[in-house]
Image (cartoon, rainbow, N blue to C red):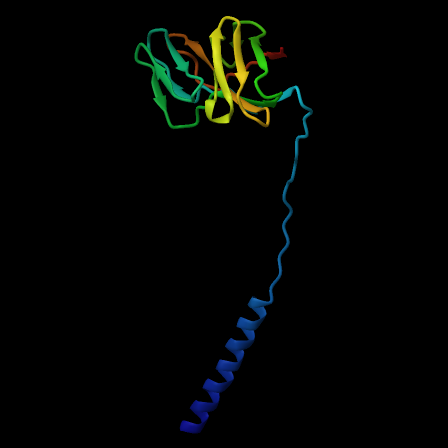
Length: 182
């Protein structure tokens, strides 16, 4: 009886080993996306969309200010939810010590969605000094490229006007920005 038990264990062990070997040799294949953006000197690209994040409106009109550094505040009882907000982001390349003028197409635009449109106004621009830029003044918005490579980045913020009891849903809109390399 003991021999039979030992044989059963040996067969069971071999079966288990065979199953383990099969699963170790299993193969699966998936696909992924790859992309690249190639830009020329004296140009720029969008790196992040301006996103005011998730908000809960109040029973009175208020504002959400998205700063160009990515932080935000709200007024009149509007509640800021989560951390999905982000400043608009741009990067480009010019030449070392070159002055660049930044202008927003219109200093206001509207976000449309399921309820009344929300006005976006007072766009602000902040150069990221760590990436080679220094703001010279705010109107027009000028900065000098401080990076030896000519590469720079900057953030864009704005103020969102939220209506009293704004209808829930997703709101979106477009705006333009222009760089003039001096």
